[in-house]
Image 1 (spheres, one colour):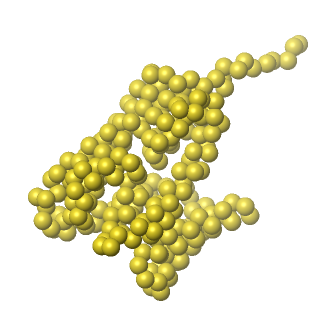
Image 2 (cartoon, one colour):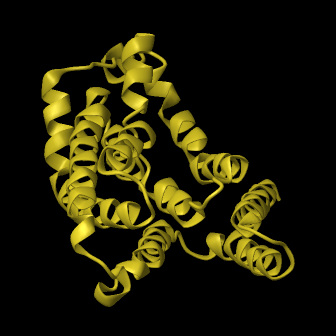
Image 3 (cartoon, helix red, strand yellow):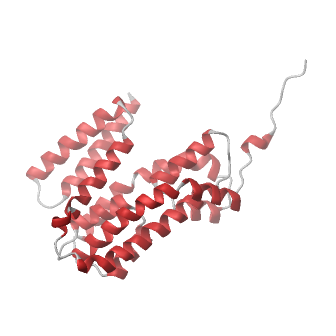
Amino acid sequence: MPEKTTSGTEDRVTFTLAGAFAGARKCVPIAISGCGIGLVFGTLAGQAGLGTAEAALMSALVFSGAAQFVVLGLWASPLPVATIALTTLVVGLRHVLMGAALGPVFSKLPRLKAYGSVFFMADENWALTMGEFAKGRRDAAFLIGGGLLMFLAWTGSTFVGGALGGAVEDPARWGLDFAFTAVFLALIAGMWNGRSNILPWTVAAVVAVAAHAWLPGQWYILLGGLAGSFAGVVRRGS
């Protein structure tokens, strides 16, 4: 009997409006929850001295809740530009690996579509997109559909939070000062993958605590992130 051959349809990558709408529909619950966090960020940004437009512009250009909350914790006068840049880089390094995971599919797209889409890549729509790819679906517009919805929800709620921030004189009274910690606790819970996380997370925590105790400023964030990342690489290579 002749050997079966597979057609190239499984590897064919599309970029359709239907795929974008599918991604947006899947991200509706995420966008709704993102509005709540965006409101908190806008409020706290106003308390830190950022104007409403400045906070919204940060959300539009950075589009990373984790990095933005970190930067808000570093916001002071004079502004520690180098520390903010390095810390934001460390927080965002995971996007290099996330983008590489999309590479086998997105490398088949025109550059404008590929790079335009990954600007709107966040943890949530990336995970949903990878789930679609795992099922054999290859509509790359799924990522940007979900990302655009999340982007609008995030920037819009940041603007509203900044506009209303002046009405909240004492964020601690409403528990808003705990938002930074709460966001990262939620991120940690969502990123837990089992025992494989124990070593890098433990190393990151130990180094961060030690750096906080012995070094001035916010270097403990950077050093803890680097140490945890290095431990994760070593563990995977062993």
